Image (cartoon, rainbow, N blue to C red; front, top):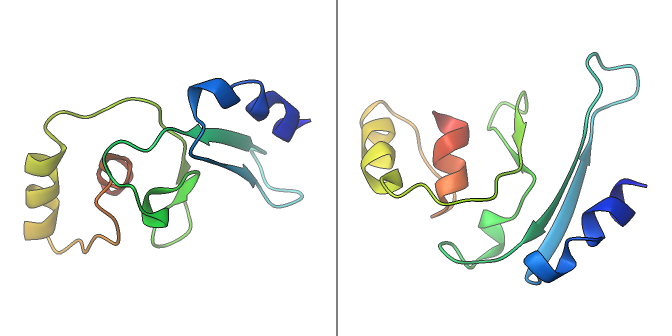
Length: 94
């Protein structure tokens, strides 16, 4: 069902797709689906749903953070090492 719902939006994100389902018995339970339109980070490192380094958080995001490079620099200064060039990873790290 999640994949069908996600793919209804295929015209909005033709460059890729992904799903996340929380583990059975998790509370709260969640399902996230994403269709990707690659703009900033064109590599697979920018794919979504994106998981935080510790695996605790997952995000799907559709938009653009215009000052993400400034925010990225602030987080780098605090010791966060990024694995993508994506504004989504900056949101997740923040």
